[in-house]
Amino acid sequence: MRTAVGGYADDAVRDLAAQWVQAWDRIAPTWREAVDVLVAWAVERGRWPNPVEIARVEQVQQALDTADTELDGLAAATTAAVIAAAGLAIAATVSAEPDVIASQMPAQYRQAMRDRVTARILPSALDVIRTRVTQQITAQTRPLSADASAAMRRELVRGVRLGANPRDTARRMVASVNGAFSGGANRAVTIARTETLDAYRVAARYAHEANADVLDGWVWLATVTGKGAARTCPSCWALHGTVHPLDSAGPLDHQQGRCARAPKAKPWRALGIDLNEPADSIPDRQTAFDALTDDQQRQVMGPARLALLRAGRIDWAALAVRRDNPAWRPSYTPRPLTDLNRIADQRR
Ligand SMILES: [Zn+2]
Image 1: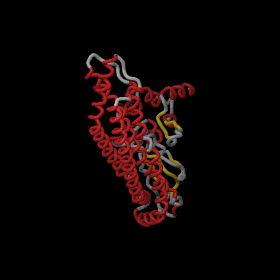
Image 2: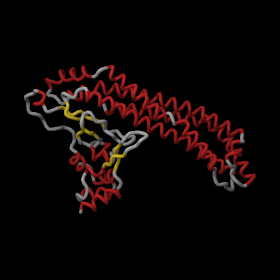
Image 3: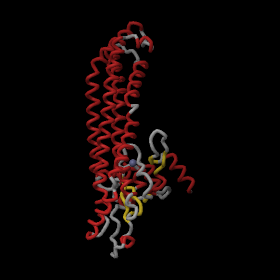
Image 4: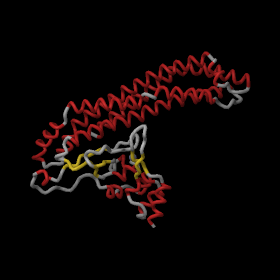
């Protein structure tokens, strides 16, 4: 399920990145023309034009208008691509959650559990989730076009230092405008990664809450084994394996985070299954971290953080800090090293 959901996010990211590049290729000629006029103006007078003077240049107005049209199209394409990816993520979650929960049962009880969990996931509730996710994505993508347009205008007004060679000056100016335009692409990609994963988390939370009679909570699952383990941040390492109430949102991962929410079945005997249970197969955080090489551990933590952790001067829980974000949602991110040093000093 994690691979499928991550794949939908990756597909949307690839698609959007390509669309933004193609759009810039379409508008680049108008910008080169506009910038050539501005640079010629500046060279003649020995200074960069002010906003009023810039606005009088017809080619600049044309370039801005063309860019705004492209940006509106890109914002709409971003909204559509992310909503589609989120829809696929929700569908993948709904079809996999019954298997994930049933997998925690003895073999002969799995089919019954799968059927029971599936029956509790109501299509009408999923419709409500899809509507809410769509609203959330639309709210995130709405400012994309205007913000990128404003950033391009700011670059124009800021100007560039006039060099000896007008062609170099023009090239630097076009690069600045391109950078502002691409800032929109970076945001679109972040939205695609973040919102696709959040759609999965919302759907999983619903599936878990609807099956509260067989679950004890959910487990924060980070990538702590395999190829990706060294790329998992200290905050996600710290939260891996922690158990949370079913009715709590999450995992409240940072932007672009890929942590998952694993349902935790009640003990077999509490479910009326009179058998001895095998050990939990979710990788233990400390064991997984110890299995990394020194280089990988340093890659995750950085040398100073790693030294504090190894010396027992901070514990795992100190590594993650919750931050509130009025424009988005609360999220856990790595606690800065200066704060960790203070915590370690206070413990001494
Ligand atoms: Zn992380």
